[in-house]
Image (cartoon, rainbow, N blue to C red; front, side):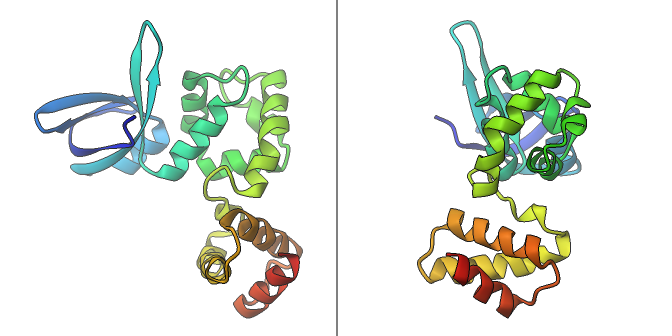
Amino acid sequence: MIDYIKGKITELNPSEMTVETYGIGYKILISLQSFSFFEGKSDVTVYIHHYLREDEELFYGFGTKDERDLFRLLIGVSGIGAATARMMLSSLSSEEIRNAIIAEDLARIKSIKGIGLKSAQRLILELKDKIIKGTGGDISGIASKADNGMMEEASTALVLLGFSKANVQKALNAVMKENPQISLENLIKAALKKL
């Protein structure tokens, strides 16, 4: 299985890119989110999801592991294929998708081309708990951008104390939801009480 491809971009457009490495050009399908990430860059690392069927073989590429993790979560939902998941990641950022699922924002999810009411409900039903528990990649984005550094520091401290990353994220998010203005020290203390 291919985890990533490192090389030079020889072609880049909003839906696909070609990355050359050791004389081989790999055609990789990307989302608009990844297009923005790669735009203006030459030497890149593209995280790959290898899609293999008996009649076709495709590479889906992502600028970050977080986006790839969310893509894999999305295609794990019945009725959501790779093309629909890529459309979702092109329509909304990873953070916006996670927030919409957690907030059960059916209108926001349905606004994505190819997603109807039943698919939106299924996404919420199947993914909400996984995202809250932290198995859907980096969920520190649920807090405001200014809190990311503090969340990261608190998370590192608690993981070093021996707690699992998933449990730490769940506890930190619960504390931040209750008290968004909390200090780092009090955030760690409150999270410890929940662990």
